[in-house]
Length: 342
Length: 183
Image (tube, rainbow over all chains, first blue to last red; front, side, top):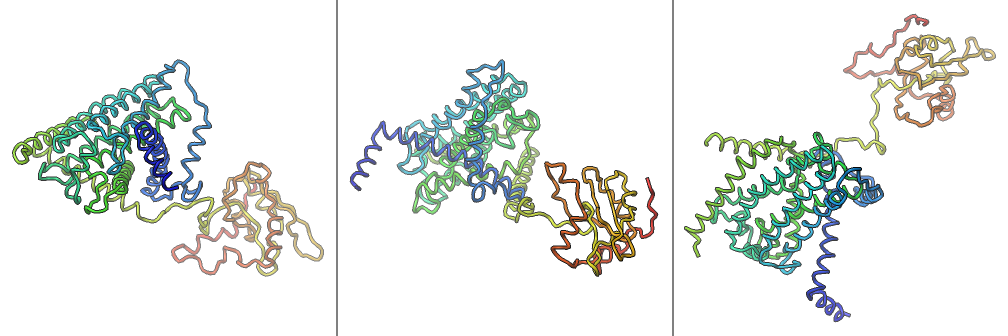
């Protein structure tokens, strides 16, 4: 019996099966997370406002996501007259799939990654940009004024925030010397002061770099206070206005999948991935703990700050984040050249 | 340069302060009432629909169908009928209908009543999809109550022994002899 299991595991670890297993596993993981992050969001929102949140469906409302899914799936998928049918249908998928694909290179544990490729970081950033296009297409194809305004906003917002994010990514590549996410995590072994976040001897502005990355991640995933794309008070539901049923549901899930991806990437780059903060007992559990702490802080931020105005959003990026991230880039390259020259 | 740096720092500081406050709220107890499972206790002077008051000594209705309330009602939603029972000095009420679809809870009836025979209830869960539910037979309601507990435990609220200390004691008294204006 045990032999059969080991044989099965061995078989599943070989190439085509490994990919398939990971694909199914990742889809299940992202699907469950997207569903239950909605629950976390609602519970979190409620607690921050001193309400109990969902309590009716299941214990502590734990079956709420299932009820939501059933409701969304039972709705009619309306394609309004005069929209670009193909683009309208494709846009939600285009938003969901890059997040799923990018998660393939995330090292969840020491040996737990679908693909341990050398350009993991590059791949994530190249796929993450598709996200913008998906929202833009959704907004454009909807043939709705609100949606088009939202699409225009999304483009300018994401262009503005992609720059500091990539500058930070370049800083991190310089510091770590690799784009292989697994290797980046391995470099942060030891205790928590080996995490990139606290390696101030390489670059004294490392915590600032993390904050810039985090802020850009919020903006790229269109989360409050940067949720200009679906500013309810101004644009109804922004690019999602004309979507109904699961079309909207997929957009919604994709938003959470992107948050998950952003938090996972922040964990890998700055918080030492699966490494334990005490140098012993490293494992997946630490990765998940760190990632979900970041996810919680995303919810926390959403329910603390009001939405920024659009020019405030662009000012923050062009006047503060880009100069500061350029500064950290120059500073860390100078520090590496002067003190850590290999 | 110096100013903008300072601005960044104070701005960041204010963000951190905001987040600290919301996190503090996160761990505090819940303040909302979970309505269908629990509801608020109505304050003593809450003005729900009216009901007939029973005499604490006899357990019967105080009302003797003088119809002052019927006449005082601006919306014409009260119907009172009375009859003289055998051996009784006064008439006593035999029918008291309140059409709550028209009642605006103005309280003129309670004010008009000279003997404090009607009072406000504390009922507020009165939603219904059935119009007939709002034509209330208050006489039947009182009789049902009399069956459930033969002697009313609390006397009339107007002569409640301890009005709350912070309330003006007079405030709860209805005008005793205000002549009802027939409308």
